[in-house]
Length: 387
Image (cartoon, rainbow, N blue to C red):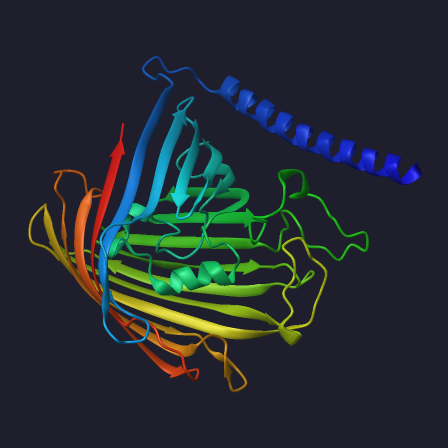
């Protein structure tokens, strides 16, 4: 009976804390709304749209014995809803299909005090590497996220690039900044009532928002066509207790006239637990581990023939590192060569496009018996309509 009463009390306590959190956010939003000066020309509005990314591919088989044709496939699909409640208060909800799952990707509120400082809270892509973390999926070359960024997100436990947290952001002169205080790996399999409480009685846990889990992003645009900067962050994963790992990135983008050049560099430690141990997503006690330093970079050059046609080349290199003599994956180093041409059928809409590209993969220091399709020819079709 006492055990039952204790569980009932804990459930009641968790529900109360969750309700108080939601109530506080609601009162905070109402308070901000009441504080704003009324502007006659502003009217609350809703902006909504859809985005679809599909692909037809002709690629080498894994055993290198031939090629296979995949005529059509939906890679990603999203439904967007942006709500503008006041001149300074807005929100976003994005539901997406990231094959084969349907889930809520973004859900956040944003309040801009002025151009120098704003606050965003909820679940979203916050500060991090310049590529994709600061861009929409629709803005990626060849409709593909660079390999190093995808591996970074997997290593940090945020495969969909989104975390729960609070972010300070703003612009000053030619400087853009974002400071994201987050829950590290998004607690993607924990129920909402468990996301901001300490589950371990011995206080070894690192669950929920914690000051050591952060990412700081800085971007400098001293010239109209040039942008450079980077990010640094610390994250703690399940099984690490109160320990954290540090990661960072650098970038330089230059867009003179019809040309476009991009260079990105990324480095992060991959956490490998001793004895092949795999912690549960809600295990925040400490288990012994080692780290393998992973790093990669990408170089891109593009040329816009006119407003509807563009040609691009991209080279990527990624070093998976190794733990002793054993590669942390089936290969240690990977080079990716991509060449393609993009057609924008709707003038003024750079997110609706057709992309024909060729991609070649070249691995080194592979494990015995490993093989993969190394050559792919694909036609990607992307449709984005926002109203």
